[in-house]
Amino acid sequence: DERRGDGDGDRTAPSASATSAEPLLRIEDLHKSYGAEEVLQGVSLEIDRGDVEVLVGPSGSGKSTLLRCLNRLTEIDSGRLYLGVTEVTAPDADPNEIRQQIGMVFQDINLFTHLTARENVTLGLRKVRGMDEAKARERADAELDRVGLADQADSYPAQLSGGQKQRVGIARALAMDPEVMLFDEPTSALDPELSNEVLAVMDELVAEGMTMVVVTHEMRFARGAATGITFLDDGQIVERGPPERLFENPDHERTARFFESIR
Ligand code: ADP
Ligand code: MG
Image (tube, rainbow, N blue to C red):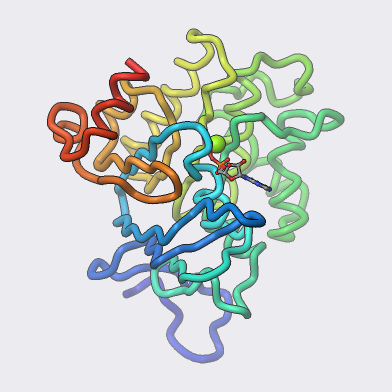
């Protein structure tokens, strides 16, 4: 793997780079409880580089918790998570490092309201990456251009539509050069028209080969972009498969009923 460092002295090379033989993301028997409620009851899942996994399931089934565990926003009770060869859940893994490599876009758009679009993107580059201001600005502008917001760099969140804010959130995550992008219902707070501009950016990322795990009920996106669909219910994977099979011919009655309910 030419991306890995060539010796012990190389501490800056990303250790997460997966070889082609192993999945990029590996979730092994993940358990998570809140009090007496076990919200993830032994979830195992492997996602290859370039895959777009769409995660669906009823409200409360544990989708957000699963995504949050993946980048260590929520600590797990037991199980193991890997990004390539790096164990995300290792005691000495640095959560800040992991959150750069596994970017996340949330349903409720959490931009800093006192910062411009550009400043929202440069913040992490400067604070976490230690980039100087000129470089960070250049990178931020490139990422804002990538999400179609080159002309809004100096706007504050209050001046942006929901769809534009969400796209700034995507640009912010992309600026950190993530290996994987997680999306937690990125369009469910948006009107259809604004949803479409966010979905268009996500389609672009798919076309670029980005590895993505997407919680969404946008079945048009799922049909067009997903390499796999995982149906989660009650903290367990009920079934997983290619979109055509899960939509048309699921093994489980629960899966069929779910797709019927969101149609
Ligand atoms: P989903 O995203 O599929 O709707 P969540 O992962 O948000 O599901 O929630 C799964 C379950 O865990 C729900 O019953 C929810 O109430 C509970 N839960 C989620 N986060 C917390 C938390 N921080 N504290 C206590 N309970 C939580
Ligand atoms: Mg959720």
